[in-house]
Image 1: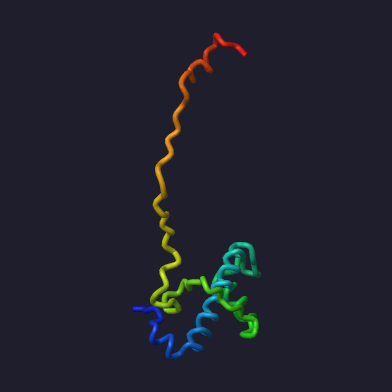
Image 2: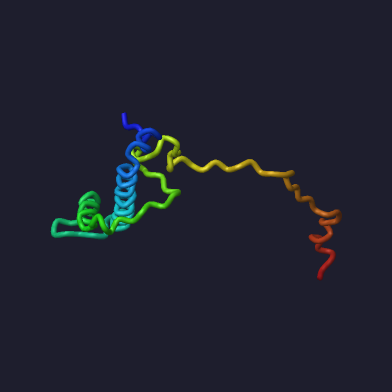
Length: 120
C-alpha cells in the first residue's frame, strides 16, 4: 500500500522530497498538456496513444526547465503527498450560511397588476 510522506521522512530528507515533488508537479503539467492533445495528434498508424504523447513530451523536458510547484499544490500521486495534505479530488464542502434565511414576500395588492381591467 502506498503511503504519503510522513513529517519525520520529510524533515530527514527535505531536499530529496522537495525535488521529488518538483518532478511530480512537472509530470502532472505534462500529463495535463497531453490531455489537450487527445485524438488530435496522428502518426502514420493513426491517432497516437496518450501515454506515448506523455512520454515524448516528458523526454524533451530538461531538469533545468522544471517549474517549482506552488505552495498550495497537492499532488495527485498519493506517494508524493504529505500526510497532512487532503485528497485534491474530493469535492469542496460548502460552508453553512451565516445569518438568517431571506424570505421574499409579495406586497399586498399584487393581483391588481395582472387584472385585464386595468389596461395601461
